[in-house]
Image (tube, rainbow, N blue to C red):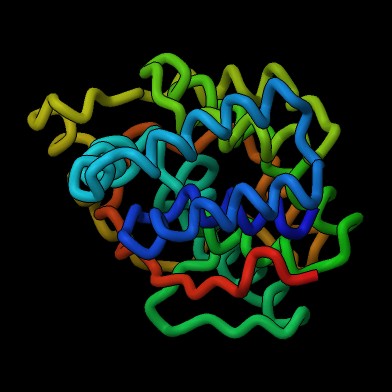
Length: 250
């Protein structure tokens, strides 16, 4: 499962010439591990083919329209479950602590809930724990997959494949709650401006009660089905730069 997760991580990253050049290596990695059912592999091969034959600038433009300009497709996990509530900050702290316990240290400008980074992290830890953490976010992955499928983009295959690795079925009510959130049209600039408008800054202690830490508390945060308020937007964060290890390494 390790190499498959590394491929999924790479495919959700910003398209570059280096990513395009690595596609043959990704195919070899997937062939060597054989963790995807054939229908999922076929769909993923469609995305690999599209990225390998597309002009890089065209691929970048499609990527930005989907993931950078559309909040409902954000690749930051906690954007979907916490928005800009105080809980998001603590969730970031808990996830960072989990990374550090496994020996992963992030650069200061990287957000730990960035999905390509999360997949890369999962590829480095024991498979059982990786499956468990993937299952915790299965409702988020499913909501994003359905929105991508509605847009008829091959990126939906990445989310189908990630979910197939968990052997978990996302809770319908949690997915439904996420899908009730606004789903912006990236070509509607006025709607996007409204969605990303900065919210009022509030000071004072949180009323959320005692802070919980550790893996169990992180699971609770990841399972949360909705943001605390649909009108609590934020500015889009900077995209982290991720350095990948060799895909076909044992």
